[in-house]
Image (cartoon, rainbow, N blue to C red):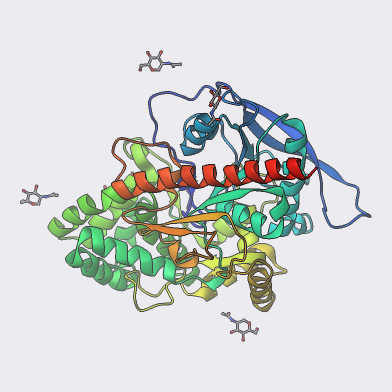
Amino acid sequence: MKFCYCYFIFIVIILIKFTNGNSTTAKHVITDYMMMRLDNFNPQDNRMWKMRFMYNSFYYQPGGPIIILVQSRRAISAHWLQSSRVTEIAKELNGTMYFFENRYFGESKPTTDLAIENLKFLSTSQTLADLARFVAAVKSKVAGHLGIIVIGGSYGGIIATWFRQKYPHLVDGVWSSCAPVLMKLNFYKYRETVSEVVKKLGGVDCSSKLKTIFVNLPNAITKDLVKVKRLFGLCDSVDLSNQLNLYKFYDWVTDIFSGMVQSRRLSISPTCKVLANSTDDLIFLSTLFNQTYRGKKQDIPYPCMYCGYTKNIDYLKSTSYQTNNRRQNFYQNCAEIGLFHTTDSENQIFGTLLPVEYYLQMCKNIFGVFNNETLQHYIDHTNTVYGGFNLGATNVFSTQGELDPWRPLGLQSNANENSPVVVVKGMSHCEDLHQIYSWDPIPVKTVKSKALELIKKWLLEVKVTANSNKKKL
Ligand SMILES: *[C@@H]1O[C@H](CO)[C@@H](O)[C@H](O)[C@H]1NC(C)=O
Ligand SMILES: *[C@@H]1O[C@H](CO)[C@@H](O)[C@H](O)[C@H]1NC(C)=O
Ligand SMILES: *[C@@H]1O[C@H](CO)[C@@H](O)[C@H](O)[C@H]1NC(C)=O
Ligand SMILES: *[C@@H]1O[C@H](CO)[C@@H](O)[C@H](O)[C@H]1NC(C)=O
Ligand SMILES: *[C@@H]1O[C@H](CO)[C@@H](O)[C@H](O)[C@H]1NC(C)=O
């Protein structure tokens, strides 16, 4: 039995690397651990835990920078320190690289399990305080470094941006890619952007045909439940006449397109060509569904897909750590940052079956203690504390993909004269953090170079300041 793994929040993309041959060996990359405080803000709580990190000092020469990459809400992995834009920058500047794993994700487990009372130590403020301790420790360990640069994408980009905002003395410059820095409960603009991109890359006909399909889908499902179950290979126990199960199923089907826009953008146009020829909406959708969620397994007699609401809730209620990090991700969305991809807008093609109430209901069913007013309070608080679009911090380079559904919550124009923002034409989620490819579109190539130039500039400032301080002494 397989569960619905929706591409829900900060998606996988940052981790899916274009595989370039077989560089999976952890060459030059060392995994290590650092003891952290469970509660950075309570001197009466002495509990500690082991945070995982990685580093690669292969290119390091004294006089080079320390470059710290912040992972999004999942496990760190060696390849980002072996072949990525970060690696290229480190090589160019004689830098050493560190990879920071956020508390509660991957192998960085502050508590024995994810029971609700243990999740209270999961918050951006605790994570930023961990990062501060980490940076201080790395600084004292790396002899002769020039300065500290922090880089992150998606959620990692949020943390990187806010780190410069809250701990400016610990970092000389930040490159933040595809980071939604304004928190919002009802993030309906996500699906609006997905819809715009489908229209832009797949054409108006495709977009209007899809809109019709999604608007009619609930009726089509009710009319022939048996056919739908057979075509999508759903488990018998999934009762689609139950509204919540229907929502869940919808969540899954519509996310095929979110995933395409975020990471498999090149498949939009071919998919639209198939749709143009198709005469049966359900066959079209279920074929796409099989390709997306079953992959190569579709030919193997595969156990049915469980796409029901309650089972999914039960799964997320389980308090043990899972490699997919889903419970802790969802907790943070329900407790601190919102960002639900609702269909509460007329300017999108996915019908109306995923209102904000659906997501709030999930929060309530999974975590019990959840309350929508408290969440709104925390979202407002998060925006007040970090500034949202009012970024005061200097030396933050923010890059956004024009086609990235997260873009509406990222900075759109220069935050101040020392914190430039570039919206990269033709780019989706975090693509600029990958190594330079021969097939990079020109705007992507340009922004990859610009990041290096800015980092050089910041490091030069560090050098100049250090020299003038020396003269004063
Ligand atoms: C990587 O792939 C190449 C060619 O496919 C092969 O010759 C080489 O042995 C592989 N290296 C490793 C470490 O697997
Ligand atoms: C990197 O180190 C090498 C060898 O020490 C040196 O020649 C080069 O100028 C350094 N590059 C930078 C950007 O500092
Ligand atoms: C999708 O996969 C299921 C399970 O293997 C299969 O029963 C169904 O026919 C497939 N749908 C299509 C349109 O091929
Ligand atoms: C669409 O149908 C035409 C005519 O049957 C066929 O030639 C073409 O290959 C089809 N295109 C796709 C993408 O299936
Ligand atoms: C949030 O809770 C309040 C009070 O219980 C309720 O009036 C409101 O409709 C809820 N909002 C949503 C979006 O569910």
